[in-house]
Amino acid sequence: MNNVRTLMMKGAMLFMALGALIGALSGPATARELDDIINSKEIRLGWLNYPPLMIRDPKTGALSGFYIESIEAVLAPLKIKPVWVEQTWGTFAAALQSDQIDAFIGGSFATPQRSLALSFTRPVAFMGSGVLVRKADAEGRFKGAKTIMDFDKDGVTIVSPLGSAGHDWLKGHFKHAKVVGVEGTNQSQGSLELLAGRADANYIDAFIGAGDVHAHPNELVDMFAEDPLDVAPIAWAIKRKEPDLLVFLNTMVEYMDTAGIWLEYEGKYKDQLGGYFHLKRNYFSVAGQTQIGK
Image 1 (tube, rainbow, N blue to C red):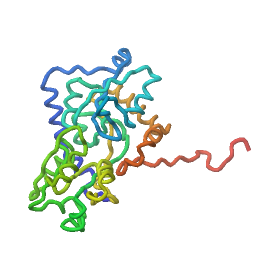
Image 2: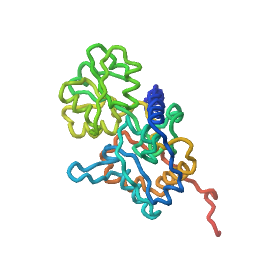
Image 3: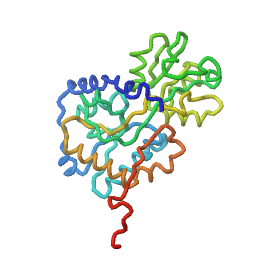
């Protein structure tokens, strides 16, 4: 994979620290301890509409998606009810700091800079990024693009989700192209801007981009579909200085990984998860080829 800027783009995310400080200054925040969560039998989990990880039915408001479904399945035997509190990329850090939620399970990129403001679990998965363009442009003016910097040209408008790692990186590094942040609960909004002709490129999470290309195969192309940019770990986030809660969540993530729960609940969404990766574990017998008992 193209790792020339791996983590560099995700590392340009001091906005998280700023968001956390803003949240902290907005009022007193008394973090709930793990014992409080156990005693209340509820855990407040921040989420956002991010298919197929987290999905809200527009008609009924019902939640689904493999993050929602797998977490509910693991918490049910513990008699802990998840209370789902909707967030955006721009609000979840402040929500953690002001104690509106106990954890954010939306799958945020874990970076050293972000860890100055928040604590992160071990990686849930790994994700890359892509650049969507119209098919005519992929075969025309953007043909041969090798890096994200190939889109920093006069006359190019590139969109990305407001408050995302990619948007902040583009604002800090692009000197010629026009960088526009798109906001809303529809993660495909940037692609809609592209299809409407209001943008020339869409810098987006690779698996969201894969879904958009699948929905518009004759109109959109991901220039980095075979070699995602800046692959980085995604994790759950909590407020700092909550060691017991962090241990609990890390144990959940480890259990869901080794017990195959992620793969089980991801199964029905498999065709929508381009650009979404797990590490492949390599188990081996401590006894080697020795057959016990012989």
